[in-house]
Length: 231
Ligand code: ADP
Ligand code: MG
Image (cartoon, rainbow, N blue to C red; front, side, top):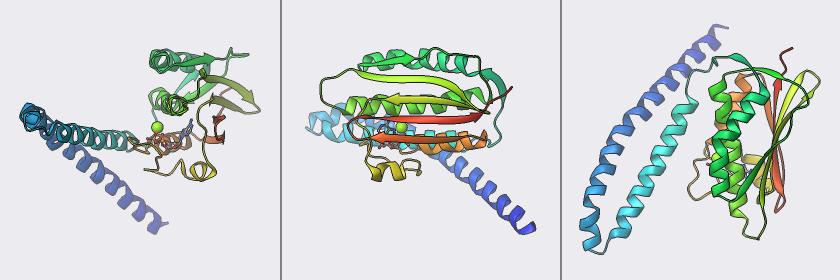
């Protein structure tokens, strides 16, 4: 028992240390970004505008990774409160609807048959659903055939659990991707961080739930989040 406690202590310290390093890296990145912006007109006079673009894009990418890493190293004990799942999903749809429309996707929130309460950290839980919806939008924009992108969202009761489903008719995934999508830093996107789902999975586990996925190439993907139902 002592051994485990000691190891946990070390892990917690390592977590704190890496979070503070990540935080410290942000400041120099911000100043590098600022100076590149200032150099931009000079670079374009030299016909090297392209370099500035690449540097800026790479700095933004580093910032995204740090941002998501910091989000994932927040306190592991969630700030829980009881909330109807319908309210949570309505709020998330409000937050993402306009972005979806701009990307040519329709979000369809299914009607709720009954009021289902869950006990969650609302901020973290919204982040999870938003992560999954963003991935769905990205999977839809990846498909180049002419069709209407559709994201279906809803929740139902299954015994003592609430199941939230988020499905899309996007590009789908290969078996190989399905195998690895929860791994930290696994991404198939040019500008992906590969952190969205690993963070989401961690959050859901901290809530005593789990995430499952099914997918078919060129047909779409369905995520199911299972959480304990509060009665
Ligand atoms: P990122 O979005 O930065 O790539 P994520 O952890 O959110 O990182 O997702 C990891 C990978 O899982 C994605 O790169 C993609 O290959 C796959 N993926 C996730 N959601 C979907 C989806 N709805 N449709 C198809 N592929 C998906
Ligand atoms: Mg993502």
